[in-house]
Image (cartoon, rainbow, N blue to C red; front, side):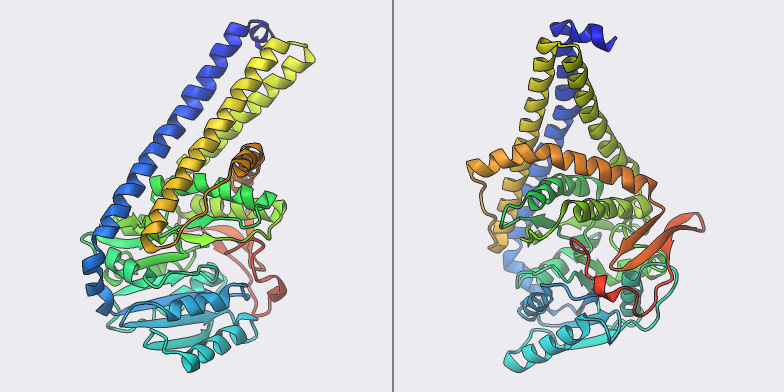
Length: 442
């Protein structure tokens, strides 16, 4: 059947136009157009509140930073937090242990900032993780430790990662957006902008551009820059949910929605990550872990998995058809398939560039600009898109069959708790601290 189709160029052309244009390209184009419009409307709404946003600066808030291992950007994260234009907030830092490499950096940096300038926080506490449970991740245990000891006046809790350097309006924006009617949680997202244009840095940037669209469409928050209203986290019993979960963000949506609250994405709060220092194998494992968190905790995981499997199957079919055409010396058929595949790749990169431009306009609202791509970089992105798709395919299959996951030196086993997926471990205070910083980030 395949061979006879390849001998008829018209049949081949019709087949590939249907597969690539209708099944693959058209839905991606529609989703990209929706995303661009959403980014524009949300950015305009964000900008419209500039004059009244300052009213939220007096709402009591707490910022939580959970640390295991010392990220290279940790000092800069503290410095960005010290510059927050916010009046009434506390910084809560939970470190894995006092022997963790992050402990001396955190304590010394906070002490230096307090001495050299007037940090905007009213109070800062740095404390070790008190208990190391065998259920749930250590990060969730650290977060639970803070959520169970919040100041009675606190109305909003904001989370930040150790690789997230934020603008001086970050906390004000999170709190203001979180206090809108019916909203229980808001978050930004991350945008990878590799300064050295390394191969794997570019692959991660291409993959993440598509991931941002999916996360926005499916309502998947990013815990690196996330705020939750106190009323909402108590109503949805988030503290109890975190007891067995691997991560905090994907596990929030189901209970939040069930409790009657909404989650909102705030485009101007995109965090720019310029790191290039990664390798392809660690990158693949990192992407697999991002997907696994959705598999474990997010209600729309089947849609995420279906997208990944479908796009991988389409590309595999293209490769198989090309191989068959070469074996049987069917050069017209090979030319048609190869040209269709090239068109698919080029249009896909064009959509990624549209997404990048939309992101640049969004972050420009808070005076952070993304660099435009040169013509040479665009060509490089086109060449590296197939590699990105291969990495994504491997990662999606890996996340589907995973029975355990390693995160910052701890191996977590996927376990079912009362019908709900979670993780368990045998974490010890000194477990693999030399490998505590993730191979990529997070």
